[in-house]
Image 1 (spheres, rainbow, N blue to C red):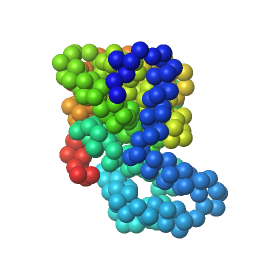
Image 2 (cartoon, rainbow, N blue to C red):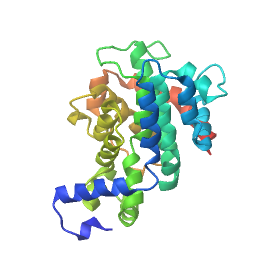
Image 3 (cartoon, helix red, strand yellow):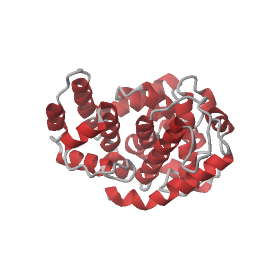
Image 4 (cartoon, one colour):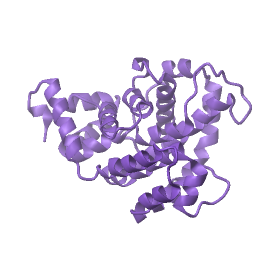
Length: 300
């Protein structure tokens, strides 16, 4: 389907995009698993045994969860051997974050080469930055202001992993247009979102926002996804949006994975101001996270 050759009102295009998202066969796995687990965890006396059994229904899914939990990206000091053990150690909020993260693995790997690696590293960087903001200093002891607000590190991991999920939607639902976008992105030195708007009249950040809402994910995830290329437009979760913007920028600047094109814009001044950080802090973040690029093979 090529939207560009079919003049339509913007509302009609958005309706068609939403309808296409709902028809994608590979995506419903996430809401089914997440809704069941979320419903169970909504009870104050939720059963670890019942949740473990739900998660164990899909062996490959359970395996990915354990690999994520035991990876350096989460950094637990002891090895976790079972889903039930993971639930006991992690708690509800962290577990939900990992469920979301591991659920998008397959579709992301299949949709675009390098996107999973880019997204996973962006997720790790976002989690790391959020943890540094929470602690009020980086590992080198550089003090940071806490006036920027507090972002949940594990929620930022999920937002980071899913920030480019809109590209998966384009690749699956609008394959011809996606190929065209990728070709132009290789040739033009301009933001990918501009190219997407030229072809589809919508960009991956907006598509990702639509999908995340369709999945009934928290607004602390879907709003930063929506504005991670337009931080100045965010009226809520500004700190989370700024962290996501910075993590995406740094991951692309470090050349880790592939996000769709090689264009690297200047660092966003709104992000720097919202987080109340300086270039020295950003340099230290890069030095701390870059060595973890060698751990990306854990999901191969």
